Structures are given as C-alpha cells and as structure tokens.
Length: 256
Figure (cartoon, helix red, strand yellow):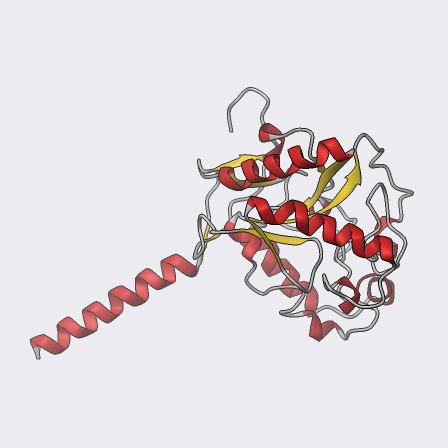
C-alpha cells in the first residue's frame, strides 16, 4: 500500500508542475527579464493596435493599459539587430503587437462568442466564418503570452505613421494602410491571403514579404506561415510559460 501511495504522490507532483508551467502567471509588475522595446531601440516604430479601438474587437483589449511593446530582453535585442540591417536600406520595422497578457487572449475568445458584426467581418475575415478563426488565426492559448512573439511589418524610414482614420477598415484589402509597405493585406486580416506564401500576389507585394523574411530569419525569428506579420524568436526563453501581467505605462525615471 505504501508503494501505491508513493506512486500517486509522484504523479500528483508531476501534474502540479505541469500545471504551473502551462497556466498563466499573474503578477502586478513586469518580470525582470522583460523590457520595453522603446528602451532598447526607440527607432523601431510602434502601432500597438490592441491598446486602442483600432482592432478586430473594435475596443481596447484587457491587459493593454499602455500602447507599449514589451518583450523578453533577448528578443528585444534581436529586433534591434534586425532594425540595424534595415536602416541602410532606408527602412524600419513597425510592431503591432508584442507580449500579450493571457487575459487579452481570454478576451479574444469571449469576442468569438459575440454576434457577428458585418463591418468587422468585411474588414477582418471576409471569406471565413467566425468559428474558423480559431486556432489558425487567433490562438486560444497564444505564444505572444510567452514574451517572444511579435507582429510586425516594414515601413519607409522616417515616413509618417499617420493614417486616414480608417486603417483597419481595409485590413483585408490589397491597399496598404498608414506608412506600411505593401504586403497585400493589412495587419490582422484573417484570410488565406495573409498566408506568407499566398498565391496571386503582385510582384512588389511578394518582394516585400520576402524581404521581411530575409531580415528577420538571421536574427532568430521564425515566421508563422499563416500570417506574414507573425514571428517568434527561437529558442524561446520561456517556451512553457504563459504570463498575465498587464502592460503598464512606461516610466521615464528608470523605475517600473
């Protein structure tokens, strides 16, 4: 009987460790290994869509209390290196999303249960039913929450990031929004056209996609084939940990 108790105890311990490793970790403050990208490379443009209403949910997303890109330091440094290769070409990176709190992922799942908005469907998923967005385009457990995944594009260095106020109304339109290079689709277009190797692209659109791949790959970033903007740094510093600390406004006095 004692041997049976030992086996059960070990199994329970293993199960508990697995739960700790895969469950979201909540904290009021940002962990020490995480940094604001602006503190590592302020030249990288930021257009943090989920901190405002210009996104597929049409409202600010929980956990995004500031429009700041937050990443594990190693990942931010790798982005800085990629940015350095772009500057001589007259180009820059622009990030749309970086670390994503687990509570934001839960909000996306809750959004999926709401009635379909015709306007949102036309802009973000014109060819797919809402139910088909999970898990190929919107993960129920996102790698962004591990702090090593970024959504980004290319822009002309020194160009204006201003848009006409309707940027995401054309997310799945071929026209680029704001100062983005033409990739054939805009950010968060949930459609096969957003696949990195999508067919029927214009020559310039394909060249821009290939350039983004060529810039990111040597610095440890692997593209997710269904989304041209989605890259994960490898090996991931926290491959089994999903964080849930909110993104707070960045302090300018060196304190978090």
